[in-house]
Length: 193
Image (cartoon, rainbow, N blue to C red; front, top):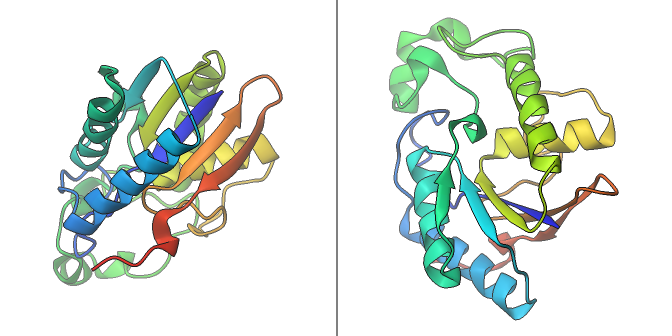
């Protein structure tokens, strides 16, 4: 079985993408709750691959410490590249890139970045690599996980980020033989201070 884990909550006042923003205290608690769920439900894996973006790396390190499994960093697991907007405070981005305040279509690229269609094509190739594995945990971002759901279910990508319920520190199970994917844990049900 393959497990896909979205990183915990980071500081959402900033544009994400390839930005290196730390997990928040809540994000760390979310990841720890997901680890507790995995341990309680005897979820095991032999390897961990993680996006090399900071919030994913911090998430992967928490899992690695709990399981005693080393991490392999994989840049192909990165989120959508938001180009010049990456890491900007959202208010600053609104002022600097007024034309991007609207919802972009799946074909429109961020300035010097990717479009959702670019992300879909990139992650489609990554998913073929993931499907060749078993007993693996993949730590990544909402965008890639959404793209895997699109590909597995045969749906075209959309701008609806919430379509598959890929919330912070949510855990998803992917059967590489049956090519079936489902969410199995979501820490959003818990109250965090």
